[in-house]
Image (spheres, rainbow, N blue to C red):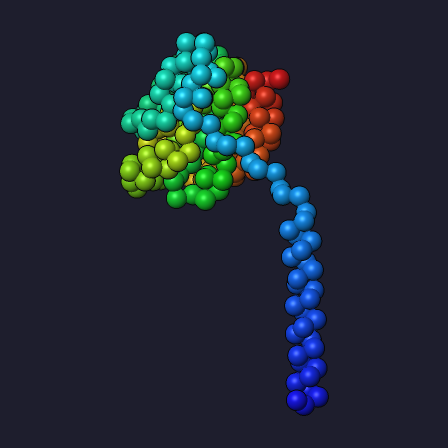
Amino acid sequence: MTAGRSALAAGAVAILVVLGIGLVELASSPSPPVKSAQLTPAQMSARLSGSPAPLAALHAQAGQLLPGGLAAVRARAAALRGRGLVINKWASWCVPCRAEFRAFQGASVALGRQVAFIGIDSGDSSRADALTFMRSFPLSYPSYYDSSGAAGGAITDSSFTPVTVFLDPRGRQYIHQGPYASRDKLERDIRRYALDA
C-alpha cells in the first residue's frame, strides 16, 4: 500500500469513528417531545358543546365546504356582528396554509365559545381537493368555497394566501398576512384583535 493510500484509509477510519461516536450520543440523548395528536371532529364537538347559538350554528357545520362565495361570506359575517370574528383564507395547494391548520384547529376549540371562526377556501380549482384536505385537517367551523379567489381577495384585501382577518365586536378590523407558526401566537392575536382583551 502506498503512503497516499495509507493516509486516505486512516482518514476514512477517523471519519467513521467520529460518525460512530455521534450516533451513539444521538441514540443515548432523550427523544424530542411528541407533538400532541390532532383532535377528532367528535372531540371538537364535545369541547364546544353549549356554545352560544350563533357559534353553535358554525360548529354544526364543522368541516363543511359551503357554497355562495362573497355574498354568503358577507351575509354570515353580518349575522355574527357584535361578536369577535376570525376569517382565515386558505387553499389546499398552499403549503403555509397546511402548516398553520393545526394552530387553527386548537385555537378554534380553545376560544370557539367566545369568538366565531370562518374559513375561505380561496383559489382552489377543485372542490374535491379542498374536501380531501379538510378531512385530513378537521376544523370546528365551516369554510366557504371560492374557486375564483374573488371572495378571499375582497374580504382580506390581498391576493396572497394564507391571510387572516380579525374583527372585534365593534367591527374594527386587523389583517394578518402570512401563516401562523404557532397556536400561541394565533391565540394572542385573537384575544388582542377579535376579543379586544
